[in-house]
Image (cartoon, rainbow, N blue to C red; front, side, top):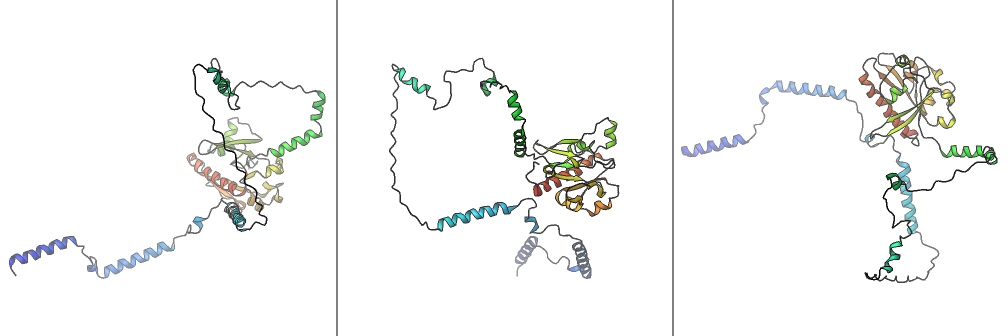
Length: 348
């Protein structure tokens, strides 16, 4: 072979070598490669042992609050009834003569004539049944009178003593009870403890649940705040909408209809807190129907009864007030989930 041919072969080999990937780079490690691979396998096994499965492909498709049976079964039943109605033969086939509708007469357009204006007076006054004043004007009227209109005031009817006595009779009580049944309140009720050792009371419930900031009862008393028998909180949701919640600390005054609207209770720990409650004051049955919470400082020891009951524990710091909002947001999330599942007829 000539020198030029050998040089061409060398150049071709070098060009091909630049475009290829060199393999088996770790062959030279020898036994050290095996030690590294075994070490990697041991670490991987240790990591896999400490893994905990959070959700599976089945649980991630399940919904906690939505009940599909009511809607899906109703749709399937309607489809089945529709199909049965199509396939079922009709026993009585009565043929009715077809009535040919009369042909509508096409109105002839009116030809405009500048010398015959009286013919168009009727068409201008005809407003198709609407009370429209074609000759009216808004000149000299306010915006309120234009939008609301001028409605004549109804005369005030004077009530005679006979009529007043008939209204206050037994029929009036029946009418009031019927009106009360028609207007059932949908405001949820939250019960808090009346004890002095509870972190939440009627003094600071508004600051904790509505303003999302913990203020102790002693601080509220020092400012001269008065204790209310009950509170009406306005919870602000996303979008600027507010939802009312009623807060009470004396559940003995609640009626049976109001007990149906109780959605949450703050637990102190002793079982005597539920004396006189429905369900025989059994905390297990109460917490199965009402969402229970326990508010405590993070360094305090958890009460033994709270530890064994189905109670959501909310821990707050004594000094770090910037953490209060995150903890109290957990309270509202769990309460919304409970109302959606157990009492969706209430306003929340």
